[in-house]
Image (cartoon, rainbow, N blue to C red; front, side, top):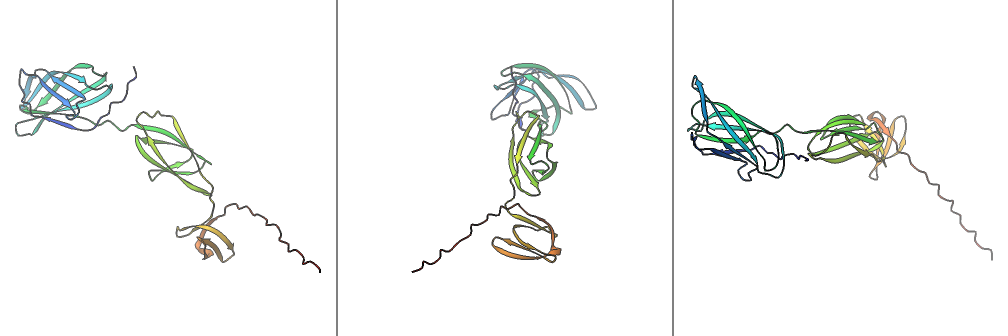
Length: 263
């Protein structure tokens, strides 16, 4: 039987149920759409010391959903009549199939007599999915969600959710790809991103400014670049780096004028 993940959210269910020695205590989680039901047997006091009492109880946990619960930890909270928390008990469920029940033994300490109870579920650790990022051509700088992640090809570790991959490489147009990592994603996968060639020349200035356009001329003292149809004359010492794209020069056929006819 294939087990699927059990969708969980952090929530707390407060119950105004008095601790009765003979009556069972029943809690469901969460309250709006119950997925798990807890039925506690009689709470028996084992002993006490310094105002702290130890209680034990058998609890039946029932999976009310159509999905298996591979492993999940719940916390039982108890409060006194002034709503001061005096109980913290842990309930861990493993391999609970849909509509299945399991009986567990619970033991907890209490400073005083609990009057009300609450049940909550601890959020699981975020699932990490290793993913190999490959670029064409290789050697591109990768950023994941704005953070440096190395040079391609590179293995990154992503959490479940939406991410943004940014790739940059000299001589190529930068690439940005959204990526959705699902909970059922298997490790060992890869993604390949192809970078397009730049269609314009790139001039990087020493102050960090980057100009994209057509370099018209260069000399020992100046660089002339056309940006959006406007020429800019730059001092050579302003320029840190120039990347020129390969251009195809098309030879125009010679235009001949017909000779005037002799009359």
